[in-house]
Image (cartoon, rainbow, N blue to C red):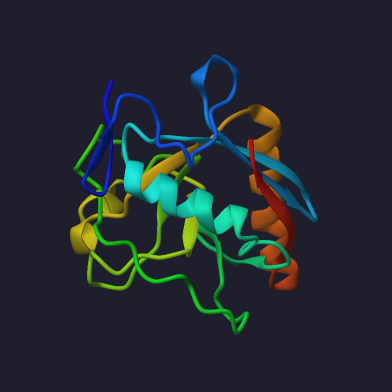
Length: 174
C-alpha cells in the first residue's frame, strides 16, 4: 500500500507518523473522563494524519478541552488563545479510502469552505452521513478503537452537557 504525503510517496507510513505493533497507528487522549484510544487511518487521509500527529507531538492538545456536544464531541484550540499551525492544504474526504462519518469516527472540522481545516476535530456520537458531502465533506482520519474508549466518549458528551467542557490532560502518539 502506498501513502502519499504532500508530493512525496512512501511505501510505508510517513516517518513522522508512529507505527504500532501490527502496523496500527494510534493516539491516546487522556481526559478528565478517562482515556480515548484512536486508531489513525492514513489510508484515508495521509496528509491529515501527519498534520494531527505533528500537532500532538507539539503538545497542542495538552491542557485543552472537549467543548461541544450535540451529534459530535469536538476539541481543538478553540478559545485557548493558541493559533493553529496553519490550515491543512487539502480536504482529503474522497482522496484515499473513503470512510463515512459513522459513530466513533473522527473528522476534521472546518468552516463552510472545504480546504480550511486545521487542529479542530470531532468524534461522531452517531452516524452523520450528511457530513460526508456537506461543504466538501468532513474528512475522517481516525476511529475510536475499543469499547472502553466508546464509553469515555459517551461520558464526555454527558459531562459537556452538564458542565460545558471536559479537560484533555494529554494526547500522545503511540
